[in-house]
Image 1 (tube, helix red, strand yellow):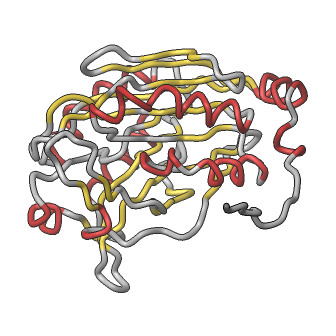
Image 2 (cartoon, rainbow, N blue to C red):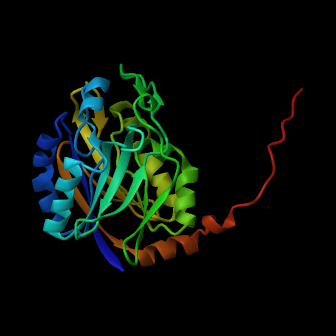
Length: 277
């Protein structure tokens, strides 16, 4: 099966309505050629502060952003991945960083709560402590697009290779890595980590990205990418708003995995043995 995919790149503001209005023409442009369109992490807004985040996060069962994106998926008859939305759970009122996949009829067919919280100091003058605001997810997710299985992840998950290996072994053909990578860590690690995840799993990797300077002062790296199962960069965004596209060919996944069957070759081994003087 062949599938044309698109990854978007833009700079989310701290106003969901304004951001969604800004990206609506980007989605329309992508929908003219692609059947699957992927938005980055923080698809609708990036808050200026923790207090604003708590104020603007939408209820998971009454989200204006979800309703708008569902309508766009339905309007354009496409699969639409909101790389992540900041939502409040009804059960316990906790915030989650949640990826949401809409089917062409606008229905939500899969959701994934980010497992790995970005608690880091990358040296850009910002202190990141995602666990102060969000409850971490616990469950890997694969969405069924018919003949193609899509493994969901978000941003900092990229650094945990075992997650992607599990998704691939469980049947994923595509790995999505929507992100708001910092400019500092992105320049150092973005390309190499994404290519490594593709090579290790024999999967296509789609990585839509935030770029530019946001209302909280953070700078995100951009460089949205689509990568082949052999680790080749098929499409890459320049600076600013962008829509990149590439075809997905399941036969190339099979070819890559037959050439280097590392998913099946992993050895079982015991605990590490330490030698000390």
